[in-house]
Amino acid sequence: MKLVFFGSPAIALVSLKRIIEEGHRIELVISQPDKPTGRGKKLIPTPLKRFAQDLNIPVYQPVKIRKDQIALEKIKKINPDLNVVVAYGQIIPSSIIFLPKYNSINVHFSLLPKYRGASPIQWALLNGERKTGVTIFELNERMDEGGILTKEEVDIHPEEGASELEVRLAQKGADLLVKTIAKIGKIKPQKQDHSQATYAPKIKKEDGRIKWEKNAIFIERLVKAYTPWPSAYTFLADQRIKILKGKKEAFKGQSSSPGEILDVKKKGIEVCCGDASVFLIENLQPENKKPMSAYSFSLGAKIRPGDRFI
Figure 1 (cartoon, rainbow, N blue to C red):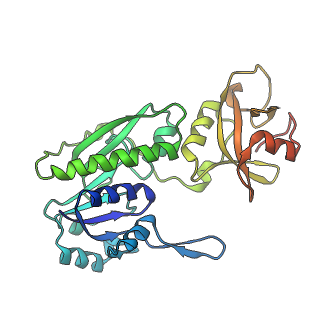
Figure 2 (tube, rainbow, N blue to C red):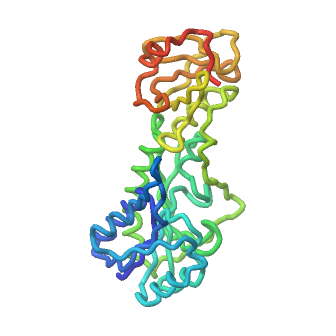
């Protein structure tokens, strides 16, 4: 089958590779523009662009595809059988959605209609979900509201963070995608129950700041959901510190204020949270330094009970 593939981050790359393995022809990859990164603001291509270039697949990167006539003309010239969209990051206009023979399908990393939006994996973890999954649906101009073609449920493991869950969902999504493409045109789309919809809005860097007045269960979920990006972080005096791993600890019965360090042990740093709960910091990363155990950091920083994260 002749396809145009829309995607940008690494989670989409798994699907692109799987489609190619199945023998489908990728005539064009459409991806987000290169982004400036680091102090020198060097332009960095998306993972999809790098991979496509290695295989000599044409790439186009519109700034705003809804207003980009060139993108439409390129796809018209190809006349694809199907557009496939995986974590592209822009709203695609109907002139492109409905152009191919089988229109356009999207791989979404939740069980729609739950967690429509840009960050379904993170929000599922933030909300303490025990299950999530992958949905493949027909694209329309409304966000994640098209008819469902196929879906598959996945258990969320107790110790699993966003990066581990993303890897599993990316593979599950790629496998389900090729099965769906093989039956495209034969599957009757199922309308979503919009009354059951929930949303997973885009996450911003500042969302990762830990509010110690929240209880330890919430903070544990925040760390899992926001590692590696945008990262969960706090401050010790004026030093910014990423919290990479931690967990809720048993209640200590101590009367302290949120953010106060209760104890420092080899297993980590115990911090008072809201509802008199306790969070154990196991691994962290001080600003401009490498990741380390919380105990190693405590030795160098000379942390003592009574010190405070803010």
